Length: 138
Picture 1 (cartoon, rainbow, N blue to C red):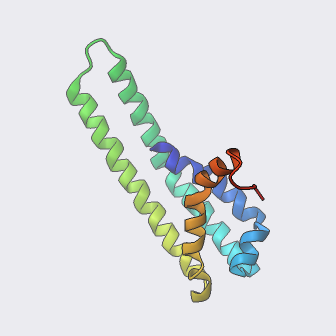
Picture 2: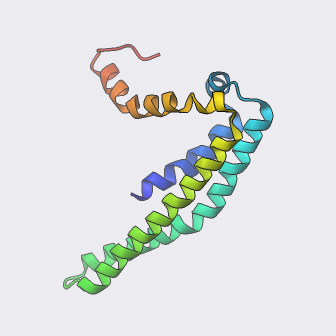
C-alpha cells in the first residue's frame, strides 16, 4: 500500500519537470500549464511526505510487534487502524491534487485523460504481451 504513494513522489516531479514530449503533444500542453502542473506536483510531494513517513513508521512498528514472540493484538490492531487512516488521508490529498491538476487543463484536454488512464491500466498487460511475443514494443 505504501508503494502506491511513494511511486508518484519519486517519479512524478521528474516527469513533469522534463515535460515529456509525448504528453505535451498528446494534450497540447502550453508551457504555463506544464509549469503549473510541476508546481502542483511539488506541493503534493511536500504535503504527502510527512503522511507517507508516518505510514512507514507505523508499518515498521507493526512489523516489530508481529515479529515478537507474543504479539500484542490490541497494539497491532491500533497500528493497522492508524495505517488505514493515514492511507485514507494520503488518498484524499492525492485526489485533491489530481482535481487541481485537472483544473489546469482546458475541457478538450481533460477529455483525453480517460484514454491515458486506460493506457496506464493496460501497461502491465502490454509488457507481458510483448514478453510473450504477442505484440511488438514501440
